[in-house]
Image 1 (cartoon, rainbow, N blue to C red):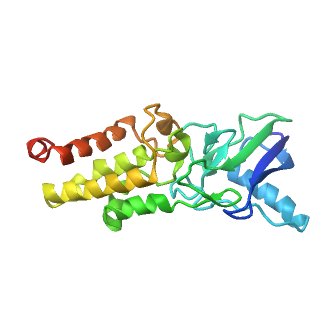
Image 2 (image 1 turned 90 degrees about the vertical axis):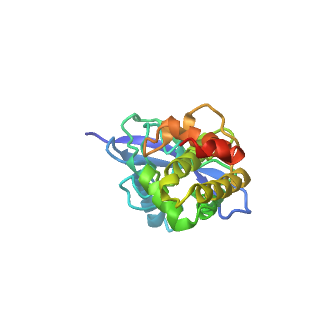
Image 3 (image 1 turned 60 degrees about the vertical axis):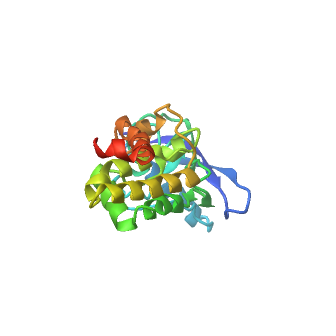
Length: 237
């Protein structure tokens, strides 16, 4: 396929405490099979050739399974392709002369570290509330890769898809109902501290690279009810 030219506006921010701005780059040899991260690689190659500092962004396996990568492309977490991580987002929808805007994931709980790289410690703090190894097993069982796109896509900054997936998979890992309620209560409290309330819009499932179902959101309400009415819950699921 023939190459084409893209004008790319990339967010630059030296540190969390400094103001950011967009810097414009022209990539004359983009192609439809190139991914968003490869586009950033190409820009960094240009910058290196010019003796300039590279753009910082979160990188990982580049196979869409580690959850480390994640940027906002034209206002959409990860990019325009539904249910695909940034490293799997291709440029096939763009044409010669188009303009692309690349920013960090957008959420108060995902503060910028540098340029496009964000701090995802809020996800880890919520997971630690369930005992970290147990939480990681629950998330793995549910298919969540902890990328943070659900939080960024929600206008309220809610992590309910992440939290709900964890809570949906935690019950089989508990030894009894009391342990289940104690663990879920700690997760819910930590999530309330870190994230906003669910917007009920369902934007999170549109961008989730794992394709997690919207039904996972209901696990948050279910565990809240179990903790509020423990005797009644003991007779249910």
